[in-house]
Image (cartoon, rainbow, N blue to C red; front, side, top):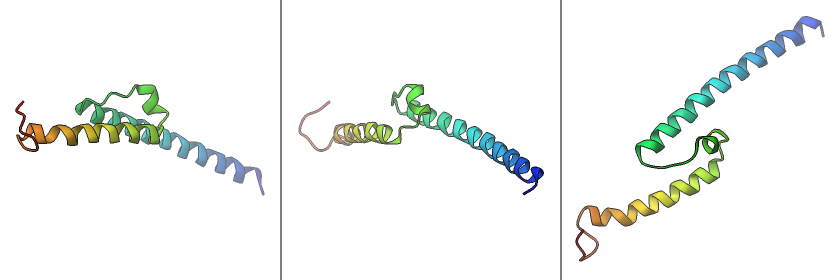
Length: 82
């Protein structure tokens, strides 16, 4: 294996890493935007470290809260009025 082969491989991998990091940052930014639009608060460092299981757990709690609140929003599901 010549010197140029591994140098080219390393250069290509570094380029791929830069592209990955750019896409990751764009994805994290979009996740934060969507969560902010729906009043879901997760600190930026948590999103950046991308603990997907923790985020999914928080989203599940939020989803349950919405499901409980929706019948009241539409005036169904209970005799109580809001």
